[in-house]
Amino acid sequence: MSVIYLLITISIIVALLFLYAFIKAVRQGQFDDYYTPSVRMLFDDETKQNDNKTNKD
Image (tube, rainbow, N blue to C red; front, side):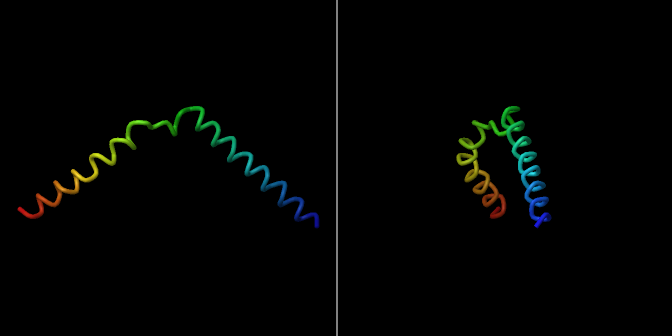
């Protein structure tokens, strides 16, 4: 039974470490990308069409 308490304690510590790393990354702005998602959908088809045109020539 003491092994279960040990494993629960270790898992909570690891979870808190991951939570700390996630909060630190969010505060540093690593997930702030407002430009790329809006532009990606516009230029994705053009690159595929250009590749297809060069392959047909």
